[in-house]
Amino acid sequence: MPKLILAYSGGLDTTTAITWLSEERGYEVVALNINAGMSKDQDTLEERGIAAGASKVLVHDAREDFLRYFAFPALTAGAIYQSTYPLATALARPLMAKLLVETAHNENAVAVAHGCTGKGNDQVRFDIGIQTLDPELRIVAPTREESMSREAEIDYLQNKGISIEWEPKGSFSIDENIWGRSCEAGILEDPWVEPPDEAWEWTNSIDATPTEPEEIEITFEQGFPTKIGDINLDPVSLVEQLNTLGGRYGIGRADHVEDRLIGIKSRELYEAPAAVLLHTAHKALESITLSRRQLRMKQYISEEYAELIYDGHWFSRHHQDLASYVISTQRNVSGSVRLKLHRGTITITGRKSDESLYDYGLATYDRNDTFDQSSSIGFIDIWGLQTRVQAKKQLLEKTDILKIAHPPQEGAD
Image 1 (cartoon, helix red, strand yellow):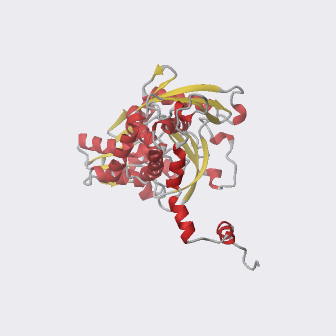
Image 2 (cartoon, rainbow, N blue to C red; image 1 turned 90 degrees about the vertical axis):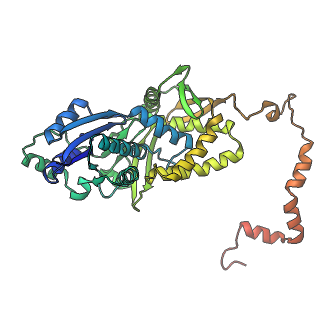
Image 3 (cartoon, rainbow, N blue to C red; image 1 turned 120 degrees about the vertical axis):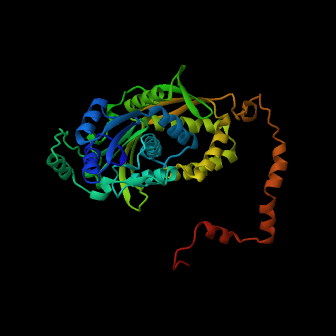
Protein backbone atom coordinates (compact mmCIF):
# COMPACT_ATOMS: atom_id res chain seq x y z
CA MET A 1 0.00 0.00 0.00
CA PRO A 2 1.32 3.48 -0.81
CA LYS A 3 2.03 5.48 2.33
CA LEU A 4 0.39 8.82 3.14
CA ILE A 5 1.02 11.34 5.95
CA LEU A 6 -2.13 12.95 7.36
CA ALA A 7 -2.13 16.18 9.39
CA TYR A 8 -4.11 14.81 12.31
CA SER A 9 -5.91 16.92 14.92
CA GLY A 10 -7.67 14.07 16.71
CA GLY A 11 -11.09 15.51 15.88
CA LEU A 12 -13.93 13.87 14.01
CA ASP A 13 -12.99 15.19 10.54
CA THR A 14 -9.42 13.93 10.49
CA THR A 15 -10.25 10.71 12.35
CA THR A 16 -12.83 9.94 9.67
CA ALA A 17 -10.21 10.85 7.08
CA ILE A 18 -7.93 8.06 8.35
CA THR A 19 -10.59 5.44 7.64
CA TRP A 20 -11.63 6.99 4.33
CA LEU A 21 -8.04 7.27 3.09
CA SER A 22 -7.25 3.67 3.96
CA GLU A 23 -10.58 2.06 3.01
CA GLU A 24 -11.59 4.11 -0.04
CA ARG A 25 -8.24 5.27 -1.38
CA GLY A 26 -5.98 2.37 -0.40
CA TYR A 27 -3.32 4.26 1.56
CA GLU A 28 -1.34 3.21 4.58
CA VAL A 29 -2.01 6.24 6.78
CA VAL A 30 0.52 7.69 9.20
CA ALA A 31 -1.26 10.26 11.38
CA LEU A 32 0.91 13.23 12.30
CA ASN A 33 -0.31 15.45 15.14
CA ILE A 34 1.55 18.76 15.29
CA ASN A 35 1.23 20.45 18.65
CA ALA A 36 1.54 24.21 18.15
CA GLY A 37 -0.22 24.71 21.48
CA MET A 38 -3.53 23.54 22.95
CA SER A 39 -3.23 20.04 21.45
CA LYS A 40 -5.46 17.16 22.56
CA ASP A 41 -4.24 14.60 25.07
CA GLN A 42 -1.61 12.35 23.47
CA ASP A 43 -3.18 9.10 24.71
CA THR A 44 -6.56 10.10 23.24
CA LEU A 45 -4.93 11.00 19.94
CA GLU A 46 -3.16 7.67 19.63
CA GLU A 47 -6.21 5.62 20.65
CA ARG A 48 -8.49 7.35 18.16
CA GLY A 49 -5.95 7.27 15.35
CA ILE A 50 -5.16 3.57 15.71
CA ALA A 51 -8.85 2.68 16.13
CA ALA A 52 -9.62 4.51 12.87
CA GLY A 53 -6.96 2.51 11.01
CA ALA A 54 -3.71 4.50 11.14
CA SER A 55 -0.56 2.39 11.01
CA LYS A 56 0.89 4.74 13.63
CA VAL A 57 0.29 8.12 15.24
CA LEU A 58 3.19 10.56 15.55
CA VAL A 59 2.98 13.50 17.96
CA HIS A 60 5.35 16.41 17.36
CA ASP A 61 5.71 19.17 19.97
CA ALA A 62 6.34 22.17 17.71
CA ARG A 63 5.46 24.98 20.14
CA GLU A 64 8.94 26.45 20.50
CA ASP A 65 9.75 26.19 16.79
CA PHE A 66 6.39 27.77 16.02
CA LEU A 67 7.13 30.79 18.20
CA ARG A 68 10.82 31.14 17.40
CA TYR A 69 10.65 30.71 13.62
CA PHE A 70 7.13 31.81 12.72
CA ALA A 71 5.28 33.89 15.35
CA PHE A 72 8.24 35.97 16.59
CA PRO A 73 9.50 36.86 13.09
CA ALA A 74 5.93 38.00 12.30
CA LEU A 75 6.02 40.02 15.52
CA THR A 76 9.23 41.79 14.49
CA ALA A 77 7.60 42.56 11.15
CA GLY A 78 4.55 44.04 12.90
CA ALA A 79 2.37 41.68 10.85
CA ILE A 80 -1.31 42.07 11.79
CA TYR A 81 -3.85 41.29 9.08
CA GLN A 82 -6.25 44.16 8.37
CA SER A 83 -4.96 45.87 11.53
CA THR A 84 -6.78 43.33 13.72
CA TYR A 85 -5.78 39.67 13.32
CA PRO A 86 -2.37 38.58 14.76
CA LEU A 87 -2.36 35.63 12.32
CA ALA A 88 -2.25 32.74 14.80
CA THR A 89 -3.78 30.06 12.57
CA ALA A 90 -2.24 31.49 9.41
CA LEU A 91 1.24 31.29 10.96
CA ALA A 92 0.83 27.68 12.08
CA ARG A 93 -0.05 26.34 8.62
CA PRO A 94 3.36 26.78 6.93
CA LEU A 95 4.99 25.08 9.92
CA MET A 96 2.57 22.18 9.55
CA ALA A 97 3.17 22.00 5.79
CA LYS A 98 6.92 21.85 6.43
CA LEU A 99 6.56 19.05 8.98
CA LEU A 100 4.20 17.11 6.72
CA VAL A 101 6.76 17.21 3.92
CA GLU A 102 9.66 16.29 6.21
CA THR A 103 7.72 13.37 7.68
CA ALA A 104 6.73 12.20 4.20
CA HIS A 105 10.40 12.10 3.25
CA ASN A 106 11.36 10.28 6.45
CA GLU A 107 8.56 7.71 6.02
CA ASN A 108 9.01 7.30 2.24
CA ALA A 109 5.43 8.43 1.70
CA VAL A 110 4.06 9.36 -1.72
CA ALA A 111 1.28 11.66 -0.52
CA VAL A 112 0.16 13.98 2.26
CA ALA A 113 -3.34 14.93 3.40
CA HIS A 114 -5.09 17.59 5.44
CA GLY A 115 -8.62 18.12 6.74
CA CYS A 116 -9.37 21.54 5.26
CA THR A 117 -12.66 22.39 3.60
CA GLY A 118 -12.94 23.87 0.12
CA LYS A 119 -14.25 27.15 1.47
CA GLY A 120 -11.60 28.45 3.84
CA ASN A 121 -8.10 29.90 3.80
CA ASP A 122 -6.20 26.95 5.25
CA GLN A 123 -6.51 24.75 2.17
CA VAL A 124 -4.57 27.41 0.25
CA ARG A 125 -1.86 27.68 2.91
CA PHE A 126 -1.38 23.93 3.13
CA ASP A 127 -1.43 23.28 -0.61
CA ILE A 128 0.89 26.14 -1.57
CA GLY A 129 3.33 25.32 1.22
CA ILE A 130 3.47 21.62 0.35
CA GLN A 131 3.72 22.25 -3.40
CA THR A 132 6.53 24.75 -2.87
CA LEU A 133 8.55 22.43 -0.63
CA ASP A 134 7.98 19.26 -2.69
CA PRO A 135 6.01 19.49 -5.95
CA GLU A 136 6.18 15.70 -6.37
CA LEU A 137 4.04 14.89 -3.32
CA ARG A 138 0.36 14.20 -3.99
CA ILE A 139 -2.10 16.18 -1.85
CA VAL A 140 -5.37 14.62 -0.73
CA ALA A 141 -8.06 16.61 1.08
CA PRO A 142 -10.87 14.27 2.22
CA THR A 143 -13.11 16.95 3.75
CA ARG A 144 -12.85 19.08 0.63
CA GLU A 145 -13.47 16.13 -1.66
CA GLU A 146 -16.30 14.42 0.24
CA SER A 147 -18.00 17.28 2.16
CA MET A 148 -19.53 14.93 4.72
CA SER A 149 -21.61 16.33 7.59
CA ARG A 150 -20.78 15.52 11.19
CA GLU A 151 -23.62 13.00 11.37
CA ALA A 152 -22.53 11.38 8.11
CA GLU A 153 -18.97 11.04 9.41
CA ILE A 154 -20.14 9.32 12.62
CA ASP A 155 -22.37 6.98 10.61
CA TYR A 156 -19.51 6.22 8.22
CA LEU A 157 -17.20 5.21 11.07
CA GLN A 158 -19.87 3.09 12.71
CA ASN A 159 -20.64 1.33 9.42
CA LYS A 160 -16.95 0.47 9.22
CA GLY A 161 -17.14 -1.07 12.68
CA ILE A 162 -15.30 1.80 14.39
CA SER A 163 -16.89 2.97 17.63
CA ILE A 164 -15.47 6.15 19.16
CA GLU A 165 -17.16 8.33 21.76
CA TRP A 166 -17.43 11.92 20.54
CA GLU A 167 -18.11 14.87 22.78
CA PRO A 168 -21.17 16.94 21.79
CA LYS A 169 -20.52 19.44 19.03
CA GLY A 170 -20.07 22.93 20.36
CA SER A 171 -21.91 25.97 19.09
CA PHE A 172 -18.85 27.29 17.23
CA SER A 173 -15.93 26.25 15.07
CA ILE A 174 -12.71 26.72 17.04
CA ASP A 175 -9.05 26.75 16.06
CA GLU A 176 -6.33 27.55 18.55
CA ASN A 177 -2.62 27.43 19.15
CA ILE A 178 -0.31 29.11 21.61
CA TRP A 179 -0.35 32.41 19.65
CA GLY A 180 -4.13 32.79 19.52
CA ARG A 181 -7.63 31.38 19.36
CA SER A 182 -10.25 31.88 16.64
CA CYS A 183 -13.99 31.26 16.90
CA GLU A 184 -16.54 31.34 14.08
CA ALA A 185 -19.82 29.90 12.75
CA GLY A 186 -23.12 29.36 14.55
CA ILE A 187 -24.93 32.54 15.51
CA LEU A 188 -21.73 34.51 14.82
CA GLU A 189 -22.51 34.24 11.12
CA ASP A 190 -24.97 37.11 11.66
CA PRO A 191 -22.68 40.15 12.06
CA TRP A 192 -25.45 42.03 13.91
CA VAL A 193 -25.55 39.49 16.75
CA GLU A 194 -23.46 40.28 19.81
CA PRO A 195 -21.08 37.41 20.66
CA PRO A 196 -22.38 35.45 23.66
CA ASP A 197 -20.17 35.01 26.69
CA GLU A 198 -19.51 31.36 25.89
CA ALA A 199 -17.80 32.32 22.62
CA TRP A 200 -14.84 33.64 24.63
CA GLU A 201 -12.54 31.27 26.50
CA TRP A 202 -9.13 32.89 26.98
CA THR A 203 -10.17 36.36 28.12
CA ASN A 204 -12.34 37.76 30.89
CA SER A 205 -15.16 40.13 30.15
CA ILE A 206 -14.48 43.69 31.27
CA ASP A 207 -16.79 43.26 34.27
CA ALA A 208 -14.83 40.21 35.40
CA THR A 209 -11.36 41.77 35.23
CA PRO A 210 -9.51 42.92 38.38
CA THR A 211 -10.47 46.37 39.62
CA GLU A 212 -6.84 47.42 40.16
CA PRO A 213 -4.40 47.80 37.23
CA GLU A 214 -1.16 45.85 36.96
CA GLU A 215 2.13 46.96 35.43
CA ILE A 216 4.50 44.61 33.63
CA GLU A 217 7.84 45.08 31.89
CA ILE A 218 8.79 43.20 28.73
CA THR A 219 12.37 43.12 27.45
CA PHE A 220 13.36 42.56 23.83
CA GLU A 221 16.69 41.69 22.22
CA GLN A 222 16.91 42.55 18.53
CA GLY A 223 13.13 42.49 18.31
CA PHE A 224 12.57 39.15 20.06
CA PRO A 225 10.95 39.12 23.53
CA THR A 226 13.21 37.55 26.16
CA LYS A 227 12.05 38.66 29.63
CA ILE A 228 9.03 39.49 31.72
CA GLY A 229 10.25 41.65 34.55
CA ASP A 230 13.73 40.47 35.53
CA ILE A 231 13.18 36.84 34.56
CA ASN A 232 14.60 35.35 31.36
CA LEU A 233 12.04 33.02 29.78
CA ASP A 234 12.01 30.57 26.91
CA PRO A 235 9.50 31.48 24.16
CA VAL A 236 6.83 29.00 25.26
CA SER A 237 6.90 30.04 28.93
CA LEU A 238 6.93 33.73 28.04
CA VAL A 239 3.91 33.50 25.75
CA GLU A 240 1.98 31.25 28.13
CA GLN A 241 2.49 33.71 30.99
CA LEU A 242 1.38 36.66 28.87
CA ASN A 243 -1.68 34.76 27.65
CA THR A 244 -2.70 34.12 31.25
CA LEU A 245 -1.97 37.65 32.43
CA GLY A 246 -3.51 39.39 29.45
CA GLY A 247 -6.58 37.15 29.52
CA ARG A 248 -7.16 38.02 33.19
CA TYR A 249 -7.41 41.71 32.22
CA GLY A 250 -9.54 41.12 29.12
CA ILE A 251 -6.67 41.96 26.73
CA GLY A 252 -6.60 40.62 23.19
CA ARG A 253 -10.25 40.29 22.18
CA ALA A 254 -11.33 41.15 18.64
CA ASP A 255 -14.64 40.83 16.80
CA HIS A 256 -13.54 41.12 13.18
CA VAL A 257 -15.16 40.84 9.75
CA GLU A 258 -12.25 39.98 7.48
CA ASP A 259 -11.70 39.33 3.80
CA ARG A 260 -10.87 35.71 3.08
CA LEU A 261 -8.62 34.72 0.20
CA ILE A 262 -11.40 33.36 -1.96
CA GLY A 263 -13.43 36.57 -1.80
CA ILE A 264 -15.81 35.81 1.08
CA LYS A 265 -16.20 38.12 4.05
CA SER A 266 -16.09 36.13 7.27
CA ARG A 267 -16.81 37.11 10.85
CA GLU A 268 -14.19 35.84 13.28
CA LEU A 269 -13.70 36.26 17.01
CA TYR A 270 -10.05 36.34 18.01
CA GLU A 271 -8.39 36.04 21.38
CA ALA A 272 -4.65 36.64 21.45
CA PRO A 273 -3.59 38.20 24.76
CA ALA A 274 0.14 37.51 24.46
CA ALA A 275 0.30 38.50 20.79
CA VAL A 276 -1.49 41.81 21.40
CA LEU A 277 0.70 42.63 24.42
CA LEU A 278 3.88 41.82 22.51
CA HIS A 279 2.88 43.72 19.36
CA THR A 280 1.98 46.77 21.48
CA ALA A 281 5.24 46.67 23.42
CA HIS A 282 7.36 45.98 20.34
CA LYS A 283 5.88 48.92 18.46
CA ALA A 284 6.56 51.19 21.45
CA LEU A 285 10.20 50.09 21.54
CA GLU A 286 10.58 50.70 17.81
CA SER A 287 9.31 54.26 18.33
CA ILE A 288 12.56 55.14 20.14
CA THR A 289 15.01 52.91 18.26
CA LEU A 290 14.04 53.43 14.59
CA SER A 291 14.25 56.62 12.56
CA ARG A 292 11.22 58.31 11.01
CA ARG A 293 11.97 56.93 7.55
CA GLN A 294 12.51 53.44 8.93
CA LEU A 295 9.17 53.62 10.74
CA ARG A 296 7.39 54.80 7.61
CA MET A 297 8.84 52.00 5.49
CA LYS A 298 8.22 49.50 8.27
CA GLN A 299 4.52 50.39 8.30
CA TYR A 300 4.24 49.53 4.62
CA ILE A 301 6.28 46.35 5.07
CA SER A 302 4.08 45.29 7.99
CA GLU A 303 0.93 45.36 5.87
CA GLU A 304 2.59 43.51 3.00
CA TYR A 305 4.08 40.94 5.38
CA ALA A 306 0.69 40.29 7.01
CA GLU A 307 -1.04 39.75 3.67
CA LEU A 308 1.76 37.46 2.53
CA ILE A 309 1.26 35.26 5.61
CA TYR A 310 -2.52 35.32 5.34
CA ASP A 311 -2.35 34.44 1.64
CA GLY A 312 -0.15 31.38 2.21
CA HIS A 313 3.11 32.59 0.64
CA TRP A 314 5.41 31.99 3.62
CA PHE A 315 7.89 29.97 1.54
CA SER A 316 8.09 32.51 -1.29
CA ARG A 317 11.15 34.44 -2.41
CA HIS A 318 9.15 37.61 -1.75
CA HIS A 319 8.98 36.61 1.91
CA GLN A 320 12.73 36.08 1.99
CA ASP A 321 13.25 39.58 0.62
CA LEU A 322 10.87 41.20 3.11
CA ALA A 323 12.33 39.19 6.01
CA SER A 324 15.84 40.40 5.14
CA TYR A 325 14.71 44.00 5.48
CA VAL A 326 12.86 43.31 8.74
CA ILE A 327 15.88 41.53 10.26
CA SER A 328 18.04 44.51 9.37
CA THR A 329 15.65 46.93 11.09
CA GLN A 330 15.71 44.87 14.29
CA ARG A 331 19.46 45.12 14.92
CA ASN A 332 18.92 47.97 17.37
CA VAL A 333 15.43 47.10 18.65
CA SER A 334 16.64 46.06 22.10
CA GLY A 335 15.35 47.41 25.38
CA SER A 336 12.38 47.32 27.73
CA VAL A 337 8.79 48.57 27.67
CA ARG A 338 6.54 49.04 30.70
CA LEU A 339 2.81 48.48 30.22
CA LYS A 340 -0.20 49.02 32.47
CA LEU A 341 -3.09 46.58 32.06
CA HIS A 342 -6.55 47.60 33.19
CA ARG A 343 -10.10 46.78 32.13
CA GLY A 344 -9.23 45.51 28.65
CA THR A 345 -6.80 48.33 27.88
CA ILE A 346 -3.02 48.58 27.51
CA THR A 347 -1.24 51.81 28.38
CA ILE A 348 2.45 52.31 27.63
CA THR A 349 4.00 53.88 30.74
CA GLY A 350 7.70 53.67 29.87
CA ARG A 351 10.28 52.82 27.21
CA LYS A 352 14.07 52.51 27.54
CA SER A 353 16.90 51.28 25.35
CA ASP A 354 20.67 51.66 25.11
CA GLU A 355 20.02 52.09 21.36
CA SER A 356 17.44 54.85 21.85
CA LEU A 357 17.38 57.77 19.40
CA TYR A 358 15.58 59.88 21.97
CA ASP A 359 18.01 62.62 23.12
CA TYR A 360 16.93 64.40 26.30
CA GLY A 361 19.18 67.37 25.62
CA LEU A 362 17.53 67.94 22.24
CA ALA A 363 13.98 67.24 23.41
CA THR A 364 13.84 69.21 26.65
CA TYR A 365 12.66 72.81 27.05
CA ASP A 366 14.47 73.39 30.36
CA ARG A 367 17.90 74.94 31.00
CA ASN A 368 19.65 71.76 29.83
CA ASP A 369 18.40 72.34 26.27
CA THR A 370 21.26 71.72 23.79
CA PHE A 371 19.28 72.47 20.62
CA ASP A 372 20.41 75.58 18.69
CA GLN A 373 17.04 77.21 18.02
CA SER A 374 18.57 79.87 15.76
CA SER A 375 19.30 77.15 13.18
CA SER A 376 15.54 76.71 12.61
CA ILE A 377 15.30 80.02 10.69
CA GLY A 378 17.54 78.84 7.87
CA PHE A 379 15.94 75.40 7.88
CA ILE A 380 12.43 76.83 7.50
CA ASP A 381 13.61 79.16 4.73
CA ILE A 382 14.94 76.26 2.65
CA TRP A 383 12.11 73.86 3.60
CA GLY A 384 9.41 76.31 2.48
CA LEU A 385 11.20 77.52 -0.65
CA GLN A 386 9.27 75.38 -3.15
CA THR A 387 5.92 76.42 -1.64
CA ARG A 388 6.80 80.13 -1.81
CA VAL A 389 8.00 79.90 -5.41
CA GLN A 390 4.80 78.13 -6.48
CA ALA A 391 2.65 80.66 -4.63
CA LYS A 392 4.30 83.54 -6.55
CA LYS A 393 4.04 81.89 -9.96
CA GLN A 394 0.71 80.13 -9.60
CA LEU A 395 -1.11 82.30 -7.08
CA LEU A 396 -4.58 81.10 -6.07
CA GLU A 397 -7.33 83.38 -4.93
CA LYS A 398 -8.34 83.03 -1.30
CA THR A 399 -11.80 81.83 -2.33
CA ASP A 400 -10.25 79.13 -4.53
CA ILE A 401 -8.17 77.85 -1.64
CA LEU A 402 -11.30 77.53 0.47
CA LYS A 403 -13.05 75.63 -2.31
CA ILE A 404 -10.23 73.05 -2.36
CA ALA A 405 -10.96 72.12 1.24
CA HIS A 406 -14.74 72.62 1.03
CA PRO A 407 -16.12 72.00 -2.49
CA PRO A 408 -19.37 73.91 -3.07
CA GLN A 409 -22.63 71.97 -2.93
CA GLU A 410 -24.30 71.31 -6.26
CA GLY A 411 -26.78 74.12 -7.04
CA ALA A 412 -25.25 76.49 -4.47
CA ASP A 413 -24.42 80.06 -5.44
